[in-house]
Image 1 (cartoon, helix red, strand yellow):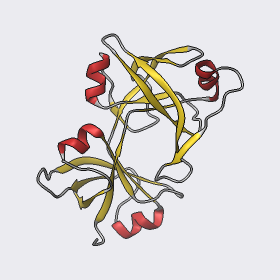
Image 2: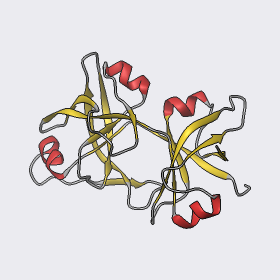
Image 3: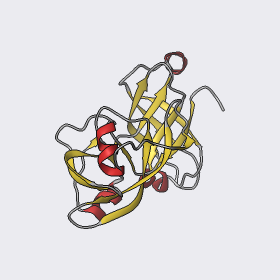
Image 4: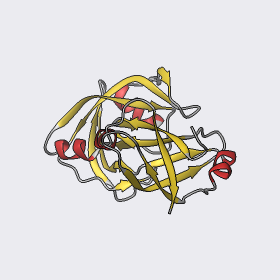
Length: 192
């Protein structure tokens, strides 16, 4: 790969929970159990699953990602949102103020979030050294070109730079399917 290539990964629907939300959903004394590590250090897919409920439908067996977070948040694709009957804004993870309401159901309890459901904005994780090598900075937006039979250019991709990040781009499965991507597909960063 040349120096403008970035690995593109699909990010499935998932939930981030606070310690309090975890207790409500799974009972007193519950904790998250890592199923496998994700590409970003310290992040993991957990064994715990929940049900998402909206005005129009529900989605079962939605994974929780660890570790626990300061705020409970649900990330869905726009296709998921239509099935649920919700209208989530497209936002960066953690930006949930004024986002869509949703119900989360666990084996021990239910949480009705007044806000917390988003469709994650496509983004690139980079360490400061990787960002310098790509010639980009934190919060900058870039375009990423894919290859193949359904090649396309993703616009408005937010660069997120932090110590401990590993170079990868995250898109949801609607976007992966639109580009005909699977696995860890490469994309080419193009500066705007």
